[in-house]
Length: 208
Image (tube, rainbow, N blue to C red; front, side, top):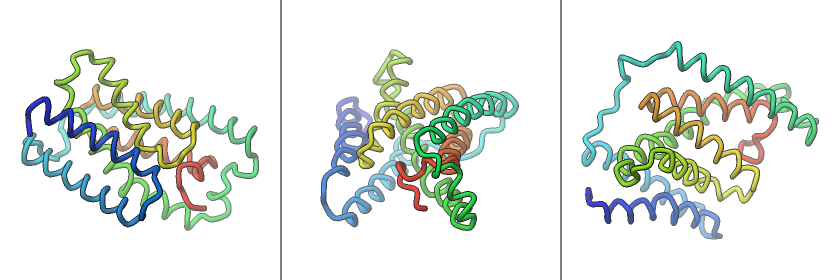
């Protein structure tokens, strides 16, 4: 399980074949089972093969992280607010203003049942397993952003692919700098929750 050939095949199956297959029309239950089995496999490899231990690092630079993330968030918030205002004014903050209970519930579910597992797979697992296969750091981060975008092919929306590719770049750079699943999950959750808040949630599968 540690040879380069095995890792290439593993990467092909987990990050390309399975996400692409989710665009095909077959039973949702089978897709769900594939997702669960894939996640279980990822956790097994991280713990038993890579010897990774899930714990909060003690030397995290919270001040720097908060400052940089806040600046990026302000830019994203400004651009997306203008975008929704121009393209679909009725959707602007619709769920927040009209369905506050649903809004809070979805943010909670999304953060803990979607964001964190995604970051475990696409940052923690991907970096630990495949970083040694790509010597060029910038190319590796680009590949990570591409496969993260591929994970959203099931939405069949070009804008979603663009947004998740850009998000993938941000998250990969954050993980590279911090080596922290916690910090990159916080950043991912912040941006994702904002898209839902501002009115872009429907294209990403958010209800409401």
